Length: 212
Image (cartoon, rainbow, N blue to C red; front, side, top):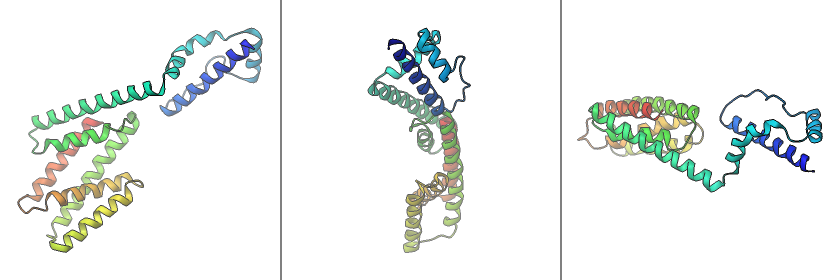
């Protein structure tokens, strides 16, 4: 019974390692002595597998309580956000960007969700591309010089599209988010639309690049 318990534990650890590898996007070939019905039968008769010691790190990792794992994850995300914000703000100031806080916001939006490397790159590129397209759309709308209720209707249609698309297509949603933000920022006639479009585009490129 003791041997079977040892075999069962190693099977569970092997399965857990496969789940961890799948979540992290790694492909691993079966280790030497991979579990098969024949090897399990032999292991139950012969005693514990010497390779079990190599799984000690995984066992320790899995033995952490959910609260400990959550605390480490929160700390890691917090550090990423802090570093990204400081870098984006510093680079924005060095480049003389008029609205460097936009770069800070763009960088934080890439890293705050705690995504892995591949997902962070995807989200960063999607946000960068979507924002730049959205700025072009906003510039075209602003060129029409809409006023009054026509401007209000266009703005609310834009906001509706953001709400509709945000859970369906992130790139399209970002396009309309950028459009709405620019329309709102230039609603005052004292703001120069062309310079605002260029500044928002530069800040987005800097912030998303740092976030990635």
